[in-house]
Image 1 (cartoon, helix red, strand yellow):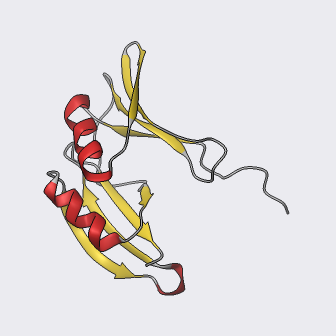
Image 2: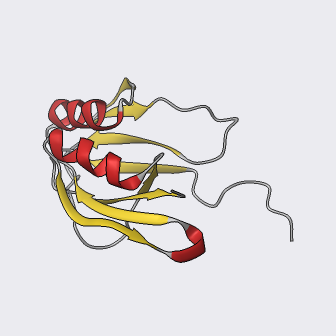
Length: 125
């Protein structure tokens, strides 16, 4: 069976204090954002190139948006998990799991953003 698209097309990360969480992701990852108002929601969309693999997404603030540490986990790709976890901690995030090998599939790590969302990292080195 050929796949015409990646299974995940969009994600949203709850951010009750949108400005604070946006600043965290800018400091920890160097991400750029575009603001979008969709009342009653405000989004800070991650800059994305839709011609490249992976999913686009946004930080979102609104009336029924709550950070979570259980349920679905989003993993951000990075060059090297250990170095990225150091940047996350320096930007105010909390490291939940240090770099761990997952064999031939590379390495993972887990962290909390400043809003309290449990998120992951993945790298091949």
